[in-house]
Length: 482
Image (cartoon, rainbow, N blue to C red):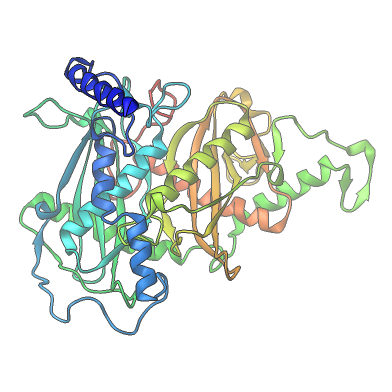
């Protein structure tokens, strides 16, 4: 009995001292405290509604697989599909990075810079919140694609960040486009200044029947102002461009004459590096490969990890798209750093499509490859009548490095492998370095990446038709983000 009395006395003493304790002290609990989890915890609370153990128990009691489709629809046969205003889905959250140092731990890297991969994860979580405000709770909404992401104005200091967005394009079919913005949080009662906008992007979400996994109709957008009409028109234009881009892939469109000339020039350069010319070994014409030229197969970085339930989506058995964006970004960053032996700066994420879902419990395989460098190893002459070698760089200090991430998922029980998407990131490195393909497959990867680089350049320079003419950040200025 004596130990029990001592324990009770200690509890009373602790209860008396608790009000006097400093609020800055971290307490140990079985669950994390809300005052140190910030806004991302708020997004998680909206995304995840059921504890994993409860979802698992319910699934086992029902005896149904979480992935298999059923023939019986789960959505009501009659739903209200009345057109909705853009403002109906608007959602805004503020991440108090400047106010909460414990929250900041989740967003800073070793150098004290904001981890953009974590921001990408928050943006996808926010897009899910916005999508369900538009569709209601009866459907399953998944991330289908993310539009190009570029930096509008780099952050110069650590500050609170405002994430906001709304549905800006929906025609009444199953898909919708959600326009998002990350900006320095404004003072209370004021609006975000244009120069405080860190980035803007768009996510495409698709609504499915939770049971049949088939697309279902959603409410269209009701346009009320000229500004909303412009946003809707931009979403419509993006939809048309995505379909046109799908027709220009190398699977459907062979390299053109200019691209073929570049491939041939690199192949001849490769023969020179190996001391061969027209299949004859001649050491007298051997050209030593420059130290700043790296073969593509030497740039690859790979990772594999099992998908844990902590990063599941609202419907419990699939991983949400933001986690994939974060993982692919960080592997791309590592690949660019290993390739250049320098710290990369993010320039852009190209439009990317999520092909297949990633189930909880599956194994995710990611492969990163340096697909293209800008300037490239060889390029067309200014007169357009030939190609020239740019390995020496002509005194250039910076190189844009495009990293291609191929993502696949494997089912542990059945060993089935499926592609889940391809992600293309562009970084700026402070070094003159080139990548060189060696095989036909690598040449095709290089050509595809070159086409993407042209689009990125047009976006940064503000030359893309129908886009903002102001131009984007080129990655060379000082910033507090990666």
